[in-house]
Length: 311
Image (cartoon, rainbow, N blue to C red; front, side, top):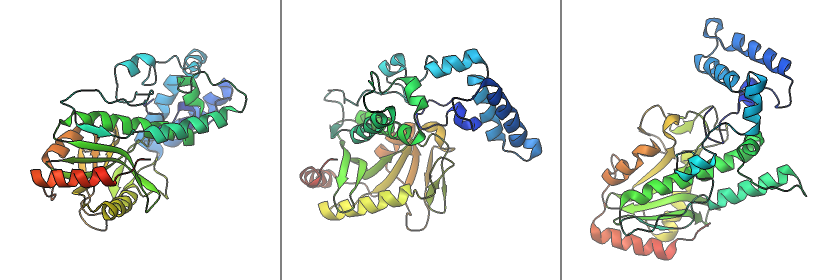
């Protein structure tokens, strides 16, 4: 299964509770094979997902391995130590180097706090929680809890990548927007302009539709681009700046194209982008965006530095 904590677990794909018997699991799998098969009007993608889920928990041995969390994935210690894209279960710490972009704030910190609070509540009062990032524990948690961890990891990974842009860039992470009560995950200032970024990981594919991001794992009442636009406008007014572009960053595998831009409507010019191509866009600028002069960069940095508050 995909490594993101927000992704559907094999049990969720098969529509069963983790406590079901092996026979019940087998019946659910066979039923879904029939329902999702393309020859009977099903979805090829869903049919494949059902098969992959069965590969992970289809036998008692595989199921025991999955339930124990022993299966290697991005939550495992070895992956975390190498900084893999789905890892970073320990909080983000920018590397100290004069060649790194100047970075302020704590990316993913507020989201991790929410995750830890909800995880402790879910486990139960009085129960010792030795490792809140234990893979087996994370997999067994409700999706609402896992999404907070996925969001934190997404922010940390974006911050890590943006930090490599160089000393000509300044980054503010987890910025509070007092007027709306919301926040902006990252504000990036450099020669190509001033960017407001929001990092997301819904654990599934997303796409632009009618000027907004949609996807199977995005809730119906979510409007990521609209929310970012509202927060960016409010912060811009309070600090006295105007953003060059608004950008939503997602894991590479969740977007069919490297980069997509809203062409018309209230979010016109907003961008959704794969994380790996983000540095190139921040260096070269977004289509239609205005580059900032050196003097303008210094002016904006002073305004932001004095006006920004963190979550």
